[in-house]
Length: 163
Ligand code: GDP
Ligand code: MG
Image (tube, rainbow, N blue to C red; front, side, top):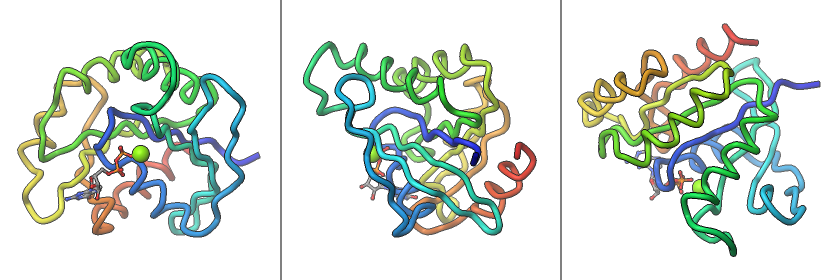
């Protein structure tokens, strides 16, 4: 079976943009069981010669029940539980927010390997925010741009080291 990679982080950091870039047109059927898996998308991701299952934790803002906090936590925990590797994404332009810190707490407790991605770091715009994310305690941030396909060589190296 392919390793499972979960893309985790607060809304609007660029998780789905990265998911779409890594999956391309190979989108699998969405698992639409009711409850915690709702709105989750899965596909076959590829980066260079690496192939993996990738899970996008999407749609948190639109779930029907519970507080935003509870829904975010439930969906993130469900994705993490079946992941072999977690891509934890922050917005390097926005810097670290209180929501990032709450998600990081959940991820840290999962005891899974984590790759910290500081997204929206195209050009030099995200350098400060990328440094800021060191304090999440999830290792060295990799500056990337999901939208502009920058930093994916470093992501490849980090993934390859864990597969
Ligand atoms: P999600 O909520 O975490 O899934 O985030 P989305 O993938 O929906 O992206 C949220 C917004 O950030 C969208 O407007 C994207 O176009 C934008 N975005 C995503 N990746 C990048 C990036 O690398 N650079 C910049 N500048 N914007 C990005
Ligand atoms: Mg999304």
